[in-house]
Image (tube, rainbow, N blue to C red):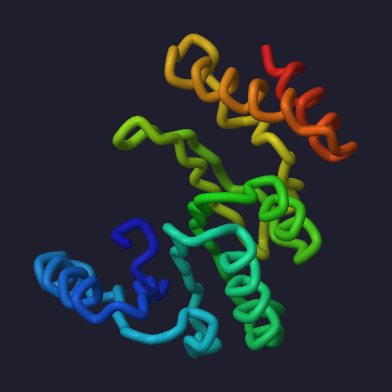
Length: 179
């Protein structure tokens, strides 16, 4: 928020007590460009003339992609003149999300692997103003000197070795190429 003071950062959830907690945290931040609201994220109104960052985490890939599609569709005119970034952390269907973001012409800014409570998550930042296509397996997020990254890669390889589909075999090949 401090890096982009002219941007509007949206914190949206359908659970009121989570929004209440965010509002308390935002009150202690010197920058006042954060907005917390209890609603369906797909229905937020982004105002032209400002850049925007929308963070969506903790939902399945299908729902996350539906939310991003709705926001992009509802704000197509804003996207012609302003920057619209998303920080996304889907809990499932990562490859479907990555492909869907490419289909929406959103480009990669950054991606990270994080581990929390023995679970791995991928955090993907994309923008309407980035020309970088998004890899199905996150080519820039891997640090194979990090044992957690190796463990995550091995989990993904084991998972796709068990899947019979053509898509799974394609993904398995991509994970095996990460060295």
